[in-house]
Amino acid sequence: MIDNLALYRYFYETAMAGSISAAAKKLYVTQPAVSSMIGNLEKELNTTLFFRTSRGITLTPEGAMLFDYVKNAFAFLEAGEDKLRDISNLSGGILRIGASDMTLRFFLLDHIQSFHESFPGVHLTVTNAPTPQTLAALKGGSLDLGVVSGPLFEDDAFERLEVRLIEDIFVATPGTVTSKSPLSYEQLAGYPLIMLEKDTSTRRYVDHHIKEHCDPARLPVPTIELATSDLVLEFAKRGIGIGSVVKDFAKDALESGSLVQIPLRSPPPPRAFYLVYLKNIALSSAARHFIESLSAKKERSAP
Image 1 (cartoon, rainbow, N blue to C red):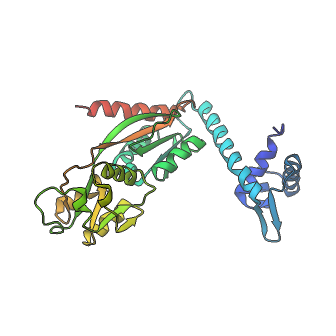
Image 2 (cartoon, rainbow, N blue to C red; image 1 turned 90 degrees about the horizontal axis):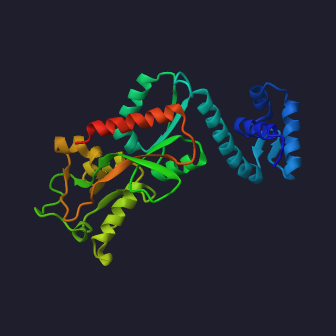
């Protein structure tokens, strides 16, 4: 490993800034100093990290690969520094949370508001991404906590706390389904279906459940796949087909009567939102307080 870690700091700031001059301003040094440090790093690694043109600089493929590692390394270092600064109190520090649209809207937002009111000095950053990306970001060190929807694959890297149950349902405009009896999934296959894209935990869960309760030769196939549950709901409201959504999303539409829930013979069982974090990384005071707050509220709401 290279002894002079400052070389990586100069490389990181230059890659982030996209120019030597901008990096020099950030580092409070001269442009030649930045160029010299990058040149030294390239010599140490025996590779070219930047393409230099009249318009500026861009990372080479080798530079882009190194940058991914350096970015994660600095994220861990900055998290460590933050943890030291806020040991005694929560007058400062950063809490980085990842969540999907669904978990943010129907669970996390209220808790974030409450935490911010209690500890206004803590800088909160919330990254909005599907569950797989949130878990990857936790492992990469760019998040402290994640709130994701289950089911979760077993992974010894994570601690998990179940914080809320959710229910997956199918909805459509009144009159779309005339049968008074609950539908089988084979019958559901006869209607246009609107579902989330395959790279979401919700879609994977519903697909898995259907496969366990349906003739493999007659599996429902979605007519339309969409990126968000809001879009699934809007398409269903227009009578385009039967939409697969978490019940919270459809609450207002169900109450107003613009959509109805389609009864199923074998509906998907409830699943959960989970608070997750890495087992082997020390948590900041802010993260610990946030977890304790969620745990206490969960206990108070338990029957």
